[in-house]
Image 1 (tube, helix red, strand yellow):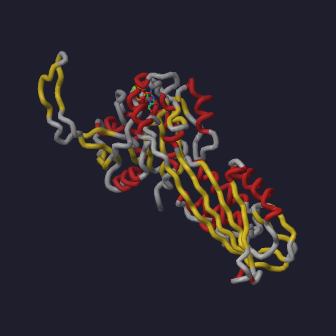
Image 2 (image 1 turned 135 degrees about the vertical axis):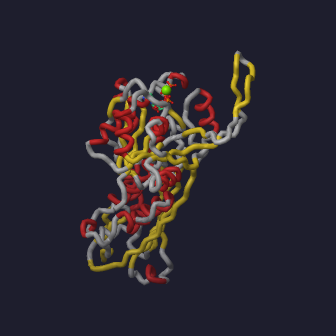
Image 3 (image 1 turned 90 degrees about the horizontal axis):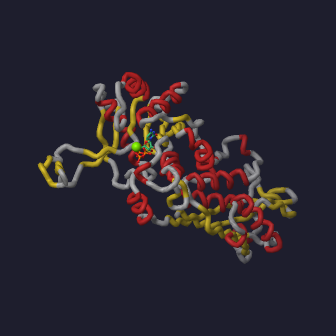
Length: 381
Ligand code: CTP
Ligand code: MG
């Protein structure tokens, strides 16, 4: 059986070195608070059961506002005066529902590449602890009164990052028996003879500590623009209306399908899943499951929109083409665009729904069914 994994995020510090008004984990970066980026980076990895965040007693309202709508978050717990005390409070909160593995991560490291989590989980097969680190590359000097005093060897020296991953019971008991706080959980574990493996870290996974770190993050902002396509077909069957983009349209036939057979909304939904590289409707809502029978297709589209929000993308444009000889789509395109706008939360002028016949050629030309294709453009700033 695969092991359960929880993340514990320490966010109870005051960020004094970073300056600025708000504690650094709540400051905006690329249009969103730092903590939200951090949570999303963890949530984008499929292995996590849930996330426990440890916050400062003054930050409850900030925390609630910043995490609104995010999935798999346990109720926050309050931190202590030191990072170690905050970690311990988080571990104790998790103990009621103990995972096998815990990933202890700084809220102030929002750029965590998910591949680091894979490296950590792999390393835990061979040791009770593991952490990402980078070899020191600069020359090291002992300084004295502002002058270089003695060179130090960088041989075998590493700079530690987080998440630091541990067998849950091992690190909880190490925290209980620790005599003094440590800079990180690796220090605390190693002081008690626990083996901790080093895995490759990433230069992107730096901690926002000083105002210069915030300036660097701003400079490095890259726009992520993606285009996804979707295509779907449903056959006609007996009936008196069809549903396209959530709008019921009277017709001489119905469309056959497991759900409401809304071929246009399916194409749009698949375009979104495509842009996210997260499979398609069939994977999220298997036709083999009876509960989706006759389902209104807006639940599929809502799921794709939710995944998009979790990943930090917004839709900039949707274009859908419906291919059929009849019914005439033109008169219905305004309410169809309106419905898609309501579900996705994007402006009407970013949604296009149009139609074409196939000149009586092929299955659509023979009026055996309707096809639809869609393109969606997503952007992350
Ligand atoms: N942290 C915590 N509880 C503390 C101290 C730190 O949860 N008592 C958390 C911070 O919120 C941060 C992480 O531990 O996500 C790493 O600590 P650090 O970078 O030192 O953050 P701060 O303590 O907030 O910053 P500073 O030391 O500049 O005040
Ligand atoms: Mg600190």
